[in-house]
Image 1 (cartoon, one colour):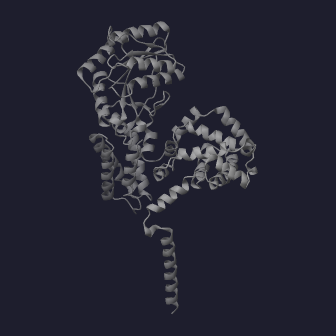
Image 2: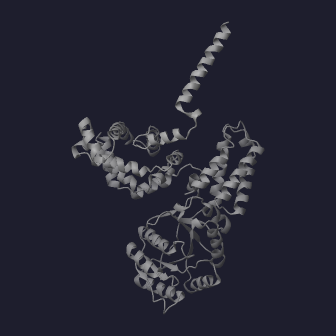
Image 3: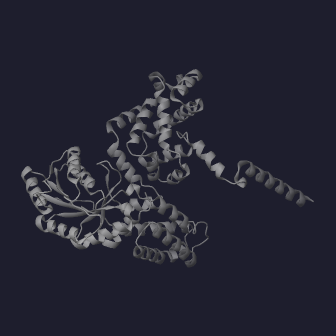
Length: 494
């Protein structure tokens, strides 16, 4: 997400890089580029105008003018203003201590509303609550069946009526009664949507609101619709007084305009974001972390939280004990790779690690998952004894492993060489804190360890350079420079 705006802002900040000092003139020039970057990302015009004005006012000051690294000060100011633009946010969904909490979900057709109901139910169930779903979308023929399927996947009951013999208000009223009868803690109403905001839709939602009195009214918006998402949020809020917004399909939006505009335009906070189709892919919206992603700073906290949720804790503790005892093997490495796969695509993981976001752009069409599959294939082609004792693998064994995994023998050699270095590092990392572990991982990445595609990337970059940037040309320039220096010395002696 946000690839477009991240790249555009990076170019805008380039105007300040290398400047001896920042003047009001180059601040305004840089802010003009920031303004264009935000507009291209489909951020609302009024929001862009206010944002640029606020950053400019804070940037034109003594503190920035005297800074040794002025471009960092500008990035810092923009970062804070992005946080102010999107926050603050309260992720809690207040529930009644006694009785039933009613959550009404609304939104346009195609926004992912019904799936989001399932995601919210999954979230509540993981928190120890007993959610109850009500199929009140009688407009879309498949909505009721879809919610029933989702309910069975989540493991929570779904209340539905025959759409030909009922109406949404009646369904919601009866659904709330049934939820109370079965002792549910929270009921989620999946209301109907339309292809666009219209009077009939708003009237229906207001009738449901009056009939059951929901404790929370949440709007589901499709982030990929950009300004349409912001406009619909404004219309729904005027009719219902929303308590929060859930942005869906944020993983597919490279622009990010909706995320930057919704709170500023409506005053309604973005509580959660949908970043995948699975029912557990509903995350808290953190303005500070989102601002970091937009500026290419990564989001290590979200990655750490995701790792805590997805990783097998007992397996990780076993591996840590083995590392401390100096017994880290290729079997252990393969298990760690499989744990990492649970976090999502390698490209997304790299973007969340500070300093590695730029490497993703260099990869181009190359897919890190292919490299991981190749490494796993090499390890799978080894015998159990070879995985436990890599030093047994001589030239003939390497040839057999390469043939079995369908790779060149050089790749097997590189894997074994990298593993030898990495196993020692991993043993040392077992007693380090999170920050020091990240530094070590960063060093391993800089060394190109376990990245069979690194050489391909370098070749690709070389092919994109002009003749003046080739290795041979650079060597020629060095020789010419040395000869010129020698000539100067001879002239001085004369």
